[in-house]
Length: 503
Image 1: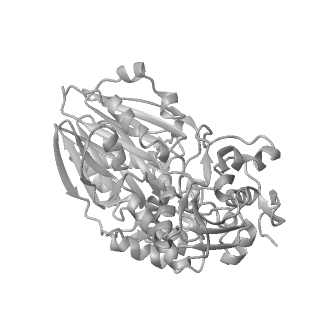
Image 2: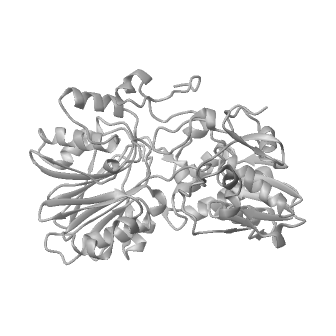
Image 3: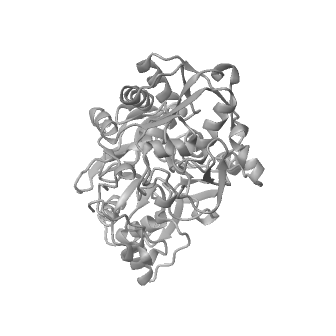
């Protein structure tokens, strides 16, 4: 019997209850935030807001809830931000009226802090030594502790985002520091968790990355000016040239067109988020010198070697399974065919107002090609299964289109634990893989068989690429110590802890 809560629908192929969904994308993970920045010397002939807009546009996949751009014009920082996509918030006239020589921007999906306008970034503040704006991708595990300390000292928060905690901590450290970069360094010794951070003061732009390097952050050059971006695809999009990644625990400073680097003085423990390679990053991005597309193909090849099955064709769930499916097909010798047509005009927040429309949600977004799958034994490739609702409906759609067998293969290990570093993994009671075998999950999904990529294979693959991964959401082994639940209750959003994981 299913362990799902009472709110459910039914997989008619198996008679097994499934949780109902209100959003078309509710079964998948939400994207991370994305940051972009450009810094030119004063008087440079650029429009930083326009470049930042285009850079963020290529990062829109990382956050579709809110966006914003802050510009620095002769030391005066102004910020425009709102809920919505970039095309909803900015137009040509708005961007033309945002002059300056520096800018930082942000696209957001909330992991800490709910969806409200004030939580949009960048966060801009004025303080005794000037102005400051920050954009942040990641999640702090000690946010509650820091927030409580700041409130006890008289600080008043205007958001529920931990990015505001970072901004306030930098401002407090700036009072007794000789420079903004020194304040950022001191802040890095106080915050714990995942952060790829851009900070803009009246004269400088600062980029910083946590000592684990959970989230990507790259440096590029555009017409002699330095740019920073969550992914290299954004550097490509504005016509820039990739230089290198910001190293874990590194602080990079740009002032008057010059780039400098300093070490934050923290122990370096590389543990890059494996899901950046599995799903979050665009396939045309390069992380740590490694092509995301090639890693996904390697995952597919490894999956075929680990869990090959007698079948006729390989079909990807678009778009997330495309690269892994190509690798699986190559290793297995099976033809890689188009099995679904994706409706690209349905947004990720497409509301299903009735139960009937919920049942039709997959066909609205993904329609199977009966001429391709009819009478075939199908290997169905996707990057992950979270709750299982969408996967079950995709399997059902293939059967309705005439597939004789559906063998589901996942190019990531099963999700069993929450993530505290910025990936929106649901609570354990909503994860289909918790306390279930692959056979039990296959029965729930209506598939003939199911196999995941093993944690060992994923870890070894990424280590071989020079990217030691964080696999906490799969293994429950966290690369940094987590504060106790009581320590974070002051944040009014306590951490839920898993016992028995060795931490």
